[in-house]
Length: 561
Image 1 (cartoon, rainbow, N blue to C red):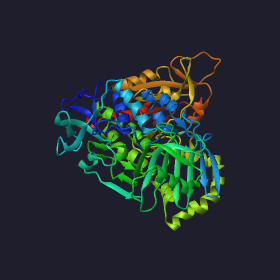
Image 2: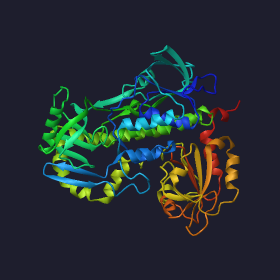
Image 3: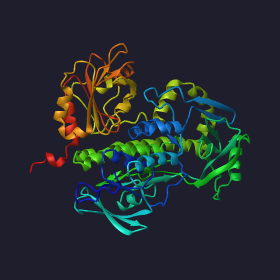
Image 4: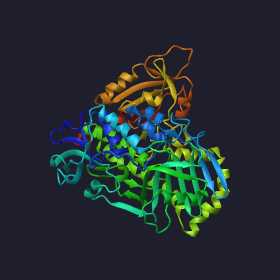
């Protein structure tokens, strides 16, 4: 598919105009391409930058990129975060990050990898499929195609360096154009913000006196300094605080002064590849959607780099939004489904902002009151906390974004026959589908790998399903046939012959993680973003059919003529 492929609807030049070709915009383009949706992706920069603030991929992001065949290569290229050394003034506390919290994912660690490498992988994936990012194209303005209807599509005014002004009619416009988003401004979407005092520095460089392969956090009454094992383009990424009132450009000498203050002169910095001074703020858009205009990534939310959440949250914004726009462009989405992007992703963005803001203020504040937790409480509590497997697991699940869920969304549901969520085992409707190794047609595979094709996946779990259930589901949901897969999942045995068209859970881990019993049939509908959309008990398929029809039938079809 080429980026210039026209929309099937003659009212539009393309279904989706993506503004911004960072990791968020590229991930959105990859998902739209997988659904065969027409789009253009533009970026005002003449070329892709090799420098970036983002340096890590979380396990959930690696899972989300699996449908594009990128996860294995990214995991092999990155450096797993196996441990953290917390350097306090009078002690160093080792924290093991490799033994808890990720049992239901193939990806066991936070992965250090430059944003530039992540962008390159996404870009190569798109180029191999005939998609070209239009660089040197600046988005300038927006207007509704129908002034009375905010959902009727948009006309965007863009400035091309090689062709001058161009106007593009798009069913949807997505602003993935960063913190200073022109799309957000032209759409009139409010931007709520609060800044952090002082200036901060980022640098990619070499360092002597640091144990390799680990994260290092230096904390004292002056604030913090972090060293992350980046690998490329340099071994280490440094994040540090400048002296209060210092507005000068950062140099290797000034970075060394920061390092000396936090390490007592035990770490020597050298060979910087890149140094950048910046201010930090905590911001979120009041809404992620205004009619046919959507915001994603830094255009929707900006926060401190603590816990490596920014780029990961942006990519997952894109992959929550993309399938909804793809189905909407094909007339296979209710208005509520398209509109659910804001309801599902904005609470996630708010949670990330609150989490990172608390951590960052505790680590960086120069207030005497806020210094107390890091100078008095942290040295007292950290040794015990680092030894708690349960606490480490809970923190890892939060930071890795494996616990992101949409239980309150109108786009998830539970069958009437299923017991209330608070007394049932396993993930609920809205939760991420856990992963496990299973057997499919004689091959060991990951469950997530089997369900990676674009569209909805229905899992018929346990015994007792009539032989014609799959056929009945396809017949009842004929409109969705290109985007619907129905498969059976059952506990199997290595000694028994493989059953065709049945995923076999040899170890029993998939059933355990899903809260299933082989004697109690259940049905799960897995959404295209890997979250459980519907779950019901028993062999009645009516609830699943009603759920999928509800979310994929445009509102106009329900209205009388």
